Length: 117
Image 1 (cartoon, one colour):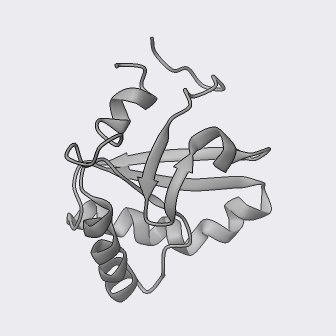
Image 2 (cartoon, rainbow, N blue to C red):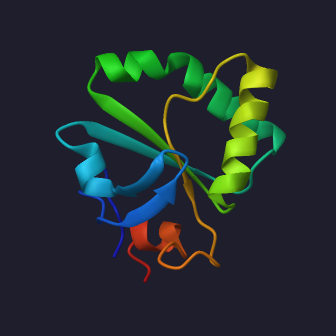
Image 3 (cartoon, helix red, strand yellow):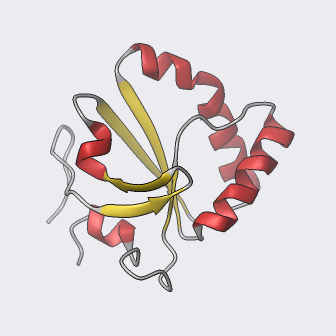
């Protein structure tokens, strides 16, 4: 299975920096932009998330929600969010999904989203 533009992403449950979410319930009647990053605290990923945090209100105006995904744990994401705010000047106003394989029920979220069970 592959995702195409305007295709419905598969539903999943995941632990995030804002608690556990059911993806489709979290989206509701909004659009969603899910973006992934390979690792917390990397320079490029940090600046990209900082920029998205700065322009997040523009997405909200357009009924679109942002959500990030990285291979690290939710606890690591929380530390990273503080680093992003400190170094980029904007706090994240959207959740980051933890993809920590040692957390039961949270393993390989990216593979679930891409339909690669």
